[in-house]
Every structure is written in structure tokens, then in C-alpha cells.
Length: 297
Image 1 (cartoon, rainbow, N blue to C red):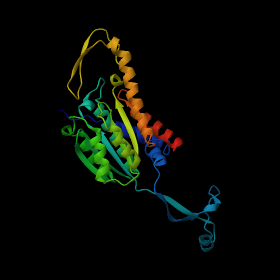
Image 2: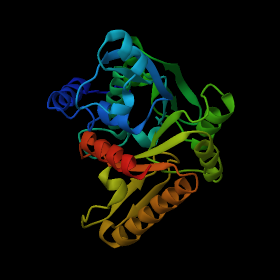
Image 3: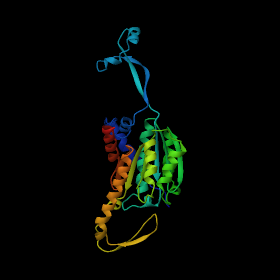
Image 4: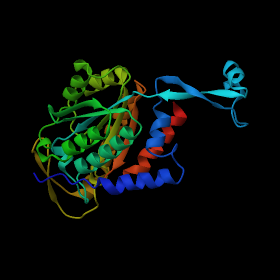
């Protein structure tokens, strides 16, 4: 397989443009900060009181010493851990547009990783098919970001069968993440085997879990093309001759049913759900997701 194409720099530049426009608490890194709170507040010093300050912050002992009103300065303690669990199986190597699902997912992970390391939190990743093919333990810093990008670009990490239950069991039982760590599970969620709901529940009970569903448009809607076509399942290799016009209604009904089941299982543990389509830019969808989560949590 050729090297995975990642077009990350324009995405990062777009985020930085947003931040320069004063949206630091509404977009990506800033919104991430707002949604995923730190573990508390720590005292970092004093400064002179200004009329816009809350009078409750005045420290009277410090004010007496300084002979002027002084307020306590508090800073959010941040040592959060964010972990990406990314599906790299054969199904993620398909696409009807300019990007394969895995390329789209990789760009999204790289962009979020950049935002996370910008605020000083820990970030890590495991890439899986029916086993874990690469694992980078959570760590902070710019070097960690580049290490994740190198892993995402490695073609040897892509392809193979699919077993989401194995990946979730790996996550839960290995114990390398603290309880309530932030976990993003990225997959097209196609071809899940019986028992996936049980392992999803275990992960949802232990972590702050968000399932990000990455779908090509044809995964959701069958094109209305006349004639007969032969389709092949990338996971099983099975082939089927279909008429897209005749199969369209049943196909799309089944897709909606599968996604509804996934959403229902996630709700049982108050986990989150986000659907992304590879022909749509993901930055705005993720920002909208962050804002929605901020309102509901």
C-alpha cells in the first residue's frame, strides 16, 4: 500500500486563523479546553485588583502587606489524558471521494492531537484491525505530536480484518489509562461482530468515551445508478450482484438502523456520538460537537 496522504498543515493554519480572530474559547483548542476541564484550580500568585474583578477574590492579608487591593490568581490544573483508538482495517481503506476513510480519520486525529498538545495535555493512540498494530502511550509535548503523525502516515499500519471488541478489551483490561481518561474511538463501525455492545459498555463505564463514525457517502446512501453492479465486501470478500435503484431504499433503511443501535448503546453509559462524512470538512463538525457537549454536560 502507498503512503497514507495527510494534508495537515492547511488544517492547522485554519485553526490558528480562527484563534487569532478571538475565538480562543470557541474553536478547537479553546473549545477543547472549555469542554474537557482540568482536575482543579491551583494558586499561582497575586495581582492588583481591577474594577472588573470579582471582589470575592480579594486577599485581605496580601492587600494589607501591599497597601493596595490584591486578588488571588488561580490557574486551571491540566494533566488530562486523551487517547485515540483508530480502526485501520480493510473497510477503512475504501472511499468514493478524494480521501479514503482512513486518510480522513488520520487527518482528524492529527489535527486534534495538535490542539491537545497545544494546551499541554497528554495524547496517545492505538491503531487496530483484529489486533493492535501500533501503540503510542499518552505523553505531552510537540515531539509526541510528530510521533503520532509518523505513525498515522506509515502504510504498514493499515489493512487487515476487523474486531472492535478486541480493541476495546485491550483498552479496558491493560490498564494503561486512568479511569475517566478521554477516549475517542474512530471507526466506520461496519462489520461489528456479536458482543461488541458489551465491550463498548465496559469502555463507556470506565472512560469519557466518544465514538466518531467516519463514513464515505456511499456507506450511508446508495447512488441511484441504473443497471446491475457487482459489489465486494472488503472484510469478508463476499460478492453480490445488485441493482442500485431497487436496493436503495432497503440499503439506507438498514444503515439508519445500524447507526441507531450504536447511538442507543452509547447513551446507556452517557457516551458521545459523532457522525462524519468524508466529503465534508471535519473541523466545523467537531467544533459544533464540542459546543453541543458543552451545553449538555
